[in-house]
Length: 439
Image (cartoon, rainbow, N blue to C red; front, side):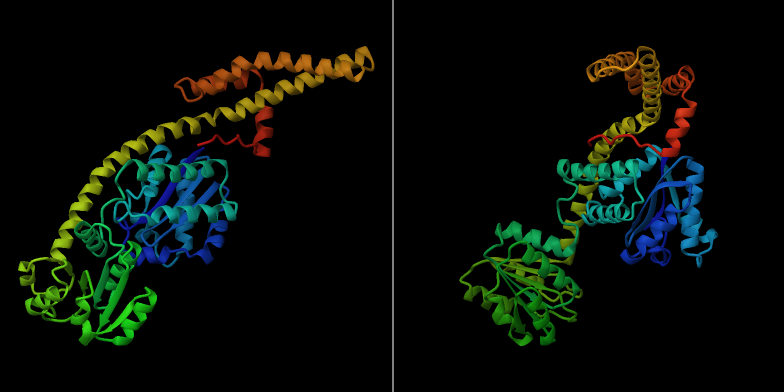
């Protein structure tokens, strides 16, 4: 048996193809059912995000597993020919599959390293698979492990620290200038997407109040309502600056809206309390000459972009540490996974011994005649004790040596020595599963 992964992502497929394979929450049940209906797939899970669609499966034969998943994807989107789809697909098995999954969960394979959304998306995909009963002992263990590895990576490295978006970089700079933001007020000049993101980050980081000035007062009202802020008419924004510790400008104006004259008056009104300007407009809307005024701090889009690039490089360094953690976790998981090969043999050996024990008890009872309950209990206890002592050593060897280089040889010898073919076939039909170990 083996773990296989087949998928496509932002590196291997353009958005025109990725969007065709997007599977919504409403569609996932039907998709999982179709995947699992293939007898090659023993367990299956589908991860579908805006940047990737991946199918993870437990299969008996790796090659047939790859082919089954590839055919599943081809039939899921028949409008895309196999000749177009195939070059977009990647396929991983065994240790390579685990490494890929653990890196995905830890956001090392994301478009932006360290982004937090992918872990939640993996949890959602896992929940859906459990809901539709398409995973079992192995994939349940695999995905619980992937989630725990991702948490370990985030705890033991700085992979998720430092801003990698322009809007959040602005918040980080404000924090460096003012320290805590809980008693600060911000003014957003412009109400587009960047301003909205910045408002969300400011509010999320404790800024006491947010005012929004926009040429469309209706839009100011709308955004102010969303963040419990204050709408400001565009012609009044200079007056509002005197009440603001942070001014973020993000408009489409083709000229400077804030100059030295306006800021000088604002600083005088504020009695020289510092004010932080962030200009993420292109063309710039704040005259860079204001940076020469005392207690005025101005950063433009290039300053923020530089901070973002520096932080991205820092995350790439942390990714090297994360890969070391993943190597350790793969080693631990692989030992457990390989030991699964021994479990059916152990169960079969125990079943065989128990079968013989019970048969011999019935024989002796037939010769001795009726036994009292106490005598029967003593006989059962004696024979069970003998069987357990005899099996202790071979079962220990099977568990310990299953993942060694001699593992297959020992398993085969056990099968022949104790004539376990029939018992193993019966177990396979009943699909007895091994107990799951704690992570």
